[in-house]
Length: 117
Image (cartoon, rainbow, N blue to C red):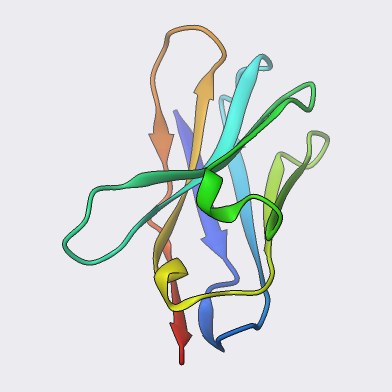
């Protein structure tokens, strides 16, 4: 089992910044992808950004140039720096970890981000 705990969400004004953190613990498999997804009210959960254990990244088009994902493999942490925030960035942000190939997805409970105009 793997446990994920997110932190860093909150209320921010348009154009502001937030840094989300996620701590992973438990039976963490080495060859993994860690990332962030978000879900706005009434919408499906969507990808924000992912990073493999060797540093390959993938971003949603909507956040490219505004968000940066990073991770500390030694600490089993993943971060999401979000800048120039927009109201449409609001939602619950979930941390995710999964093996590179196959296997089970694990999710955190989420942290709420609200961008006010």
